[in-house]
Length: 85
Figure 1 (tube, rainbow, N blue to C red):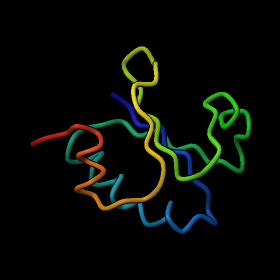
Figure 2: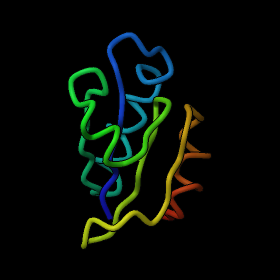
Figure 3: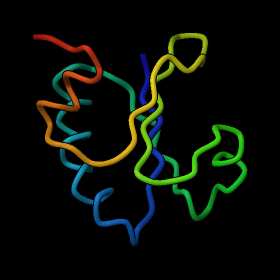
Figure 4: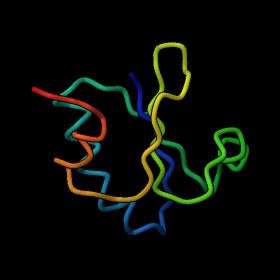
């Protein structure tokens, strides 16, 4: 599993999620690919991202398995990912 994080510098919800993503990356060993939406319009189009923050969860073949839009508390994000310790 990998999380593709679409974000922007001006996005306050994105900024709120950054430390949560950092914790999840460390605690669960999940790779997070961060894509600046302002600098990567082609990636927005490729993944059909229309708002940020958007988190696309992909499998080992880079196929989308889930999409999460918006900021949320860590416990809810972890639940959305289906992670347990």
